[in-house]
Amino acid sequence: MIDLRSDTVTRPSAGMLAAMTSASLGDDVWGDDPTVNAFQERLAAHTGKEAALLFPTGTQSNLVALMAHCERGDEYIVGQSAHTYRYEGGGAAVLGSIQPQPIENAADGSLPLDRISAAIKADDVHFARSRLLALENTIGGRVLPADYVREATALARERGLATHLDGARLFNAAVASGVTAGSLCEPFDSVSLCFSKGLGTPMGSALVGSRALIERARRWRKVVGGGMRQSGLIAAACHYALDHHVADLAEDHRRAARLADALATLPGVDVTSRATNMVFASFPQDHLSRLSTWLEASGILLPLSHNTRIVLHRDVGDAQIDAVIAAFEAYFSGHRTTDGQAAAGGQQQLSR
Image (cartoon, rainbow, N blue to C red):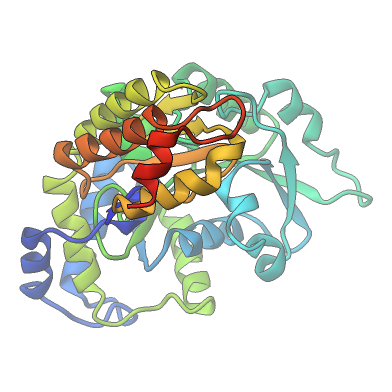
């Protein structure tokens, strides 16, 4: 199957597997896994932060970051569309007793500065204490504007808030912007980085920040069950990805743009967004069921919705993009898109 559901479906390359099996191992809870320690030191330097901490997942890395910044009864300001608010099980509230203060995201994924300012509470016993601003980059595949990031984090600092970045796809943002990962991390007190999406590791995320913050995070990581033993296997995969897979993200971006251009030519298809490795497209509502069947029969795994997200990754090459474009073109060449009725030729093709 050509899997376009997410870049989380990537599999480790042969070189990555070799690096994992040859890694020197210890016990990371005791702090003596040499591969983990070397990776954390390297990532801290790579991002311009004092320290780094390895986690099994990005959800846990983000959760622990929020818990390291905030106490019970504190709140964090976050976007309605942000993963930490919408897609991570409400962990901050459920496990951290941290109240989210969601703000509707602007079209580019940013949080309007005036709304951030208005959401910050006064120091009053009636209110949860505003302690943290959390942004996400990329968000929906879009790269946050650099000027906006500087303004938003400066506003937070002026109002006494810390800042956290969900940088699950920050390397996509760096490659698309032509800047270093460190420059994108610099405005934030903490950043969560995921290696199991476009970079292709089987698992692994990391939190970077000050030494004091990372020491608090280490304690919370243990509390929420993230203390791992011979996790040098994971660190070796992440280390390999930094050396060999980051530059490849540009190919994912190129293929996403090519697919978006092809979809935009099809009748009734509206490409609503294209950025980095993601394409969002709206397909004719009355064709969703038949189109889903067609794609599955064509060996393409893609759940369709009112605004379908299509994600490119290192396991989808040019030949697979050719096949995906051909499948869409074959469907729409044989089906009308105005009255929901299939043309005769399309019906014949679909029955095969």
